[in-house]
Amino acid sequence: MLENALQYSHTLLKEVVHADDIVIDATMGNGHDTKFLAELVGLNGTVYSFDIQKLALMNTTELLNQNNLTDRVKLIQDSHANIDHYVTETITGAIFNLGYLPGGDKTEITHASSTLTAIESCLELLKSNGRVILVCYYGHPGGKDELAQVQQFTSNLDQHQYQVLEYQFTNQIHHPPILIAIEKR
Image (tube, rainbow, N blue to C red):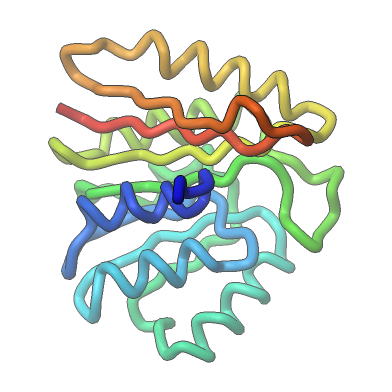
């Protein structure tokens, strides 16, 4: 069975993220990707997890506490555009879920300007064979514009430095998410 965008994002990260790695969840949301990454990096790895909304930090903190994973995660209430203020180490991977916080305020959305800045920061920190994964939810006001700008940016990355994959279901209604995976050569 073909995996949906979220499932495939985890498959792609599992292939490259290992114990002791440093990774980024650029849009922590309710903490599911943060938890997933924390399990992958093990006791000595680090997950930097970003969100601007206090609700996201509260939900993620609760999920991490329930799973005894708080010791390997740094929760940061700030825009992902400011990744470079917090992360200086080489990273193995990063994940973005673009759109809005499920169960939160649907008017609080990610925007192309901050997202592109964050992607650039992640690519600068990314080690060879590392991956930046973008799961693009675009069925909300502003979502199609952000998706278009992200697609334009990623399609223009130098093919000698990066491989870019776009994964989507083309026969589904209701704007199924599109996954974009960037792998550094």
